[in-house]
Image (cartoon, rainbow, N blue to C red):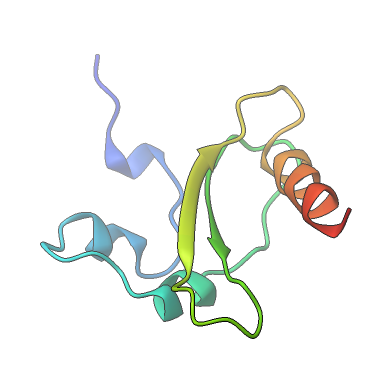
Length: 83
């Protein structure tokens, strides 16, 4: 038995994005919601920007591979970037 896309929850606009021949814009990625349950597994995208710089934004794609879920993974990234 395979996994169906209907078995997953997607943020608004992401299902269409999966079939798009071009990559999403940084603005689209930054517009994605960040409300999620603390115990869900998920794939996350971080937009990395250097303030006051001419460097183009970069994205990082990761997943919440631990038992604490996506919220704990995002909190870990936020703590690391603040320190």
